[in-house]
Image (cartoon, rainbow, N blue to C red; front, side, top):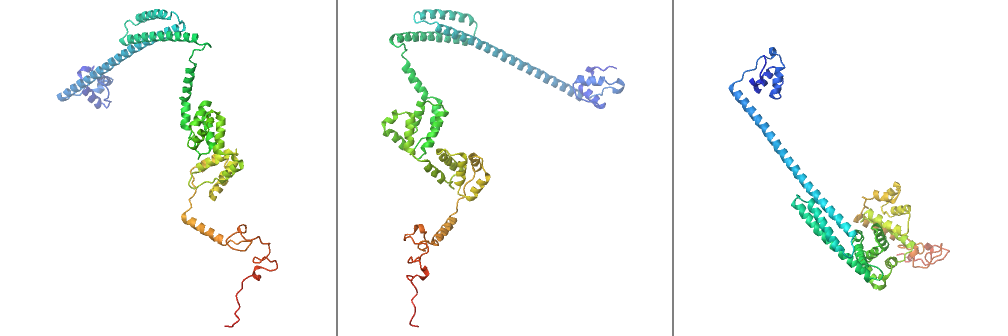
Length: 435
């Protein structure tokens, strides 16, 4: 017996499949095909449903149909909105394309007229050409939007203004050729002034002024001059820019030194640098510079990087090699444990040592420890005995008495006895009274 799908409801089909231990998922058509796949002898008849269940089934089917219809309407609305957006974008693109074509034609016409322009009769030719361009633009712009027409009118006005400027420039150039005997156009002074302004308003010159520090008398003039040369080389400054940068960074007594002699402004940059080095750097010999390098020690109140940079600057002034600089850095460490540790590390170059000691600070000696060391030093000074006069509290090199012959008496200087048997030595008085 064939089963009609219209005679059963979804609830009946689900209950029927549930009784047959089959899946109850899917649409009504899926449930119906699943039932029909079972032989009539095995499936039996559809289960009966009461009126409430039938009404609920009808309501569910109506709600499902309404939801499907609502989704279909939403999809149609979104599709229509998307189509409208696409059409609007297409129209905007078409307008922009027409505007670009019109502007390109105007640029081509202006460039062709500029190349073929002559001082005499140029206005008539350009006006005729403008009329032709306007006619062609009017034919192409029929039916376009208002913004396209406005852009065309603006382009025509700019084209006319450009033609007038070209004609005016041509007439001025021709007049200048007639006035100048050398064939120049009379604008070389303006161009040179404009070039000077461009030199000092360039980005490289501005960055160089921001980076380079001001020079004062308490700075190392050799180090500052080296920095000035490096900055000028980095930003590829011209000689004029480098000279202005040098003069503008002099402050304090250096600026007073510059204005003390009016002829310094007329000297070359190299001569000015040499005078600056001689005035604030002196003429120190390499021996003096080496002594400064050796006397520079790592202070407990500063980081190792500060000590390292100062030491390297002093080494650079005497053209010191890296291995000698490394030895000087190690010798300048006052703490013996850190100095020995630096020697054991066997650093390959000064950069490795800077990296290793970057976060290390020297230990600060306590106040009590300082007093103890001072007391020990004073005791050692008191126990010091002079080799020349046998007195305490000073060395032989600081003795104020005449130099004594080695092996002679400390008291009288005789060679036949010692100080213990010297006749000039004071002895205790003998008691002859037997009191």
